[in-house]
Length: 240
Ligand code: ADP
Ligand code: MG
View 1: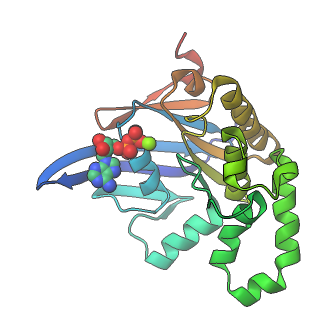
View 2: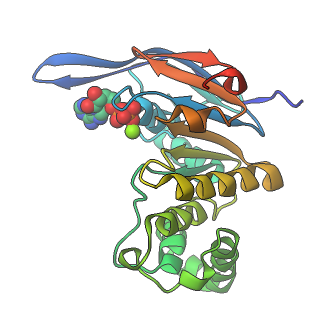
């Protein structure tokens, strides 16, 4: 098996401050994500999973500790380097879809490109961008909903749109924050098998965040967040 570590966190610490009181959330988190695998990160609501994901995505800074991607230190890199790291390597699915309500599924999938590129560049490449968006909507089974807005879609369809959007730029690593958290069991299973397909067919590395042990057990590797620390577990052995 290829055991290359693509993303690594070492002794990450993060506290929030409320009324001058320090609230420690991450107390020294260690994590290794292997290329090509599905790694899950399981923990109760409020245990710090989303906080950790934001640090790993370079959307926020740790108080202490280090993050490396493909051997490069990211946590203390320049803002532009952190942006480039995120844009070039990561797909991100946020906990509550984060779709723009005024835009159709197709426009939502295109939105990150429209924002990150100059108007001229986007205009010149719009046909290729639209083809890519159609391909992604097709792969997530949503091409027939391309002109629908989020309010006209089911939860599962919104999550499919969020997945298509996150994979537009062909990232190597997907960070998925509770991708099944708002869905019923059957719809959640469909989303999981869709993510599995991208892992199997495209070699997409996935870090899957969940509060559900049953979902975590289907991954290749599992970490459990507890008391601000992460403990490694063998996913396939865990849970009845
Ligand atoms: P999870 O994703 O596991 O549910 P979070 O990372 O969202 O947990 O939150 C961890 C803890 O940090 C919670 O107690 C939450 O209230 C607190 N927290 C999260 N974000 C902030 C913030 N921006 N300011 C203050 N406290 C926060
Ligand atoms: Mg969360």
